[in-house]
Image 1 (cartoon, one colour):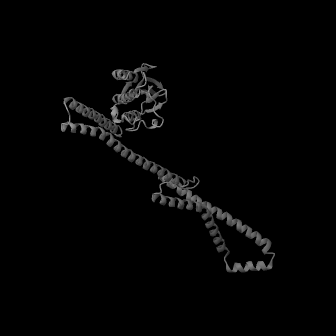
Image 2 (spheres, helix red, strand yellow):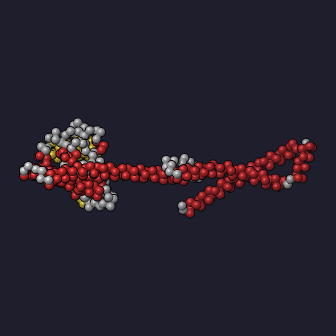
Image 3 (cartoon, rainbow, N blue to C red):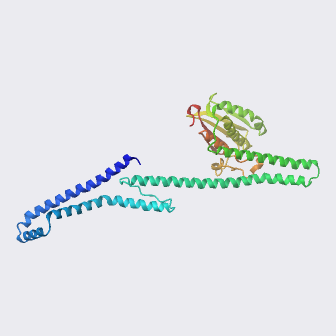
Length: 371
């Protein structure tokens, strides 16, 4: 707290005391004016009352009575002025004690007109942030548990197959060299799948590291997408898919890590190819949208079920549960893409219906560099 804030609080307290003094003086003056009026109008004309007043004045000092009355009036006003503030402070103290006893959902009613209203609001804000941190920590712990469970399952599946076929080879349980090569080939394929999974898992862990730095350069998205499509020409041919490109402009620049951006787009393209088996086309549209460059990856294969759509960017989530690692993927591709795009200050969403599935990526244009 600043000294000026302390001074303001002191002045406010002194002002309240001064108010009590002023009110008590005004009230006492009013009382004694009434007393004089009553004395002059009623008492002086009544001998018995006049004698009684004279007798009382011989016993009690008028000045002392006046001071006592003024003190009583002052204390009454002081009580009335400070009572609600003290009551509110006690209420805050009790609720803070309750919060200290792990009742983190307790909240103090904020009374802005009260001196301690700001204090109550600050305490509530602290508790809200504290609860948010607790929820984030619980979510993080659950994510770690889910990740370990998923990794254990996805590592164990190919590893079990590798050990099984190598054990057959080691035990000489094969009829001829053709069978031997068949077993070895399966073990090799599973080993490659295991390598992909481990590399993707390592990359995802690296991207989630807050110390990770992007090596940003100027990137022409039109040129980059063109090059990617050329590199995937064989994959498109094998899948019997024609990739159509739509570029309203020849040059659309962003600032980003080209290697990571290529990795993100490769994962999306691979996913589109994988699930475009009922389509003859895949479209890629690159255009400007406000301060963003927007890239749409569209395939016309089977739609993603609405129940799966919110989860497709989660780690190890697969729409087709039966494919598992048999598809050759790690189940981390879209999660990696999402992390890379968000690290660049962009975002990615997926929309799907019976006509098409589109992955919409937004990245800041170079002149709107993300800080």
